[in-house]
Length: 465
Image (tube, rainbow, N blue to C red; front, side, top):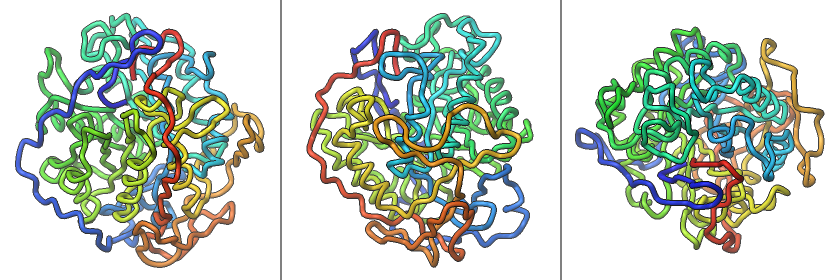
């Protein structure tokens, strides 16, 4: 999560702020919505796709049938600070979490990870961690969700780090650092090798780069006393593993700022760029020049993989403003976070019965307003496994299992806020609708009263996001 560190059980402290700006002037701040190329491309682009997955063309994300697709979903923390994950003060992430997300009509979940729990050479290595992550992936897919695996915490290149969390930016802690490190390369080699046959898994290369230049962001270099690895090298590791899965690269300034992307593009294919707009530090007046222009000008696909209102007022207005802005520019998004921690976390749920917070109510209403079709159908090589049967999850969540594909709506480029693009919704179809880029639609109704008082209770041992 953006700029925060949890200490012990429930103390939240601001740990930083937006860092710097691009190393050169913005190429354009014009984010006026306009038509995009969409998915009618030659086979040299559309053939570069992981099984069951997606490819990118301009600002569009497309499924294998050539229909445009937007990701709309939720962030699920805890596997960055607890190797078993956490739920209701116990270990483990149950299938009911993903069923409940699906009942809100989310089509993707972003799962935060810790490279030191994963890597066998790390002091914090947990042999069961990879299986835990894989179970979460399969449960999410069975519930109808694509999965973004997010490298949330790293170790500054020091595998002897002995503490998970409690030390943002500090040596000896696996926590949020300025940028990825050499050990992140091994992490992505192993993750990409594991999921290269499942295109419903996307890779977010590094959570929130900050206090670095655009050159260091792209190519690496010495930052904060250690050797950082840039986005280009992380991308190359993924492709070197034979994985054509979509990768996601967050910008600088705690992933908020994408203003330098036009002049610092990652060389490659199937790449999305992530922004993290939080209130109050990331004013809406700056969205056009920080990230909106990339989508509006059909340069690259943009996804807000975190956003929310971290103030005690958190009434859902910020979330609705962001989703409406994204709809108008055909941007994807995942909202922070599926965790009952109060406004300043900020949280989408207030309890483990999945009662929405004020922000959660706004996100749920927005999701329910989109044409819905479940995603996350596992590929043959990664199917089966944990997760239980279809049907009701806890707290009455309905859950959908496996069926369906990635249909975008029929017809042209309808994506402005409030437009309800007519998308196919019958389960099992993989590409309903003719060609266009209609799938954003749906007015983001806020309509929720304020909730959640400031605290950020985390279960014992949680030490930062």
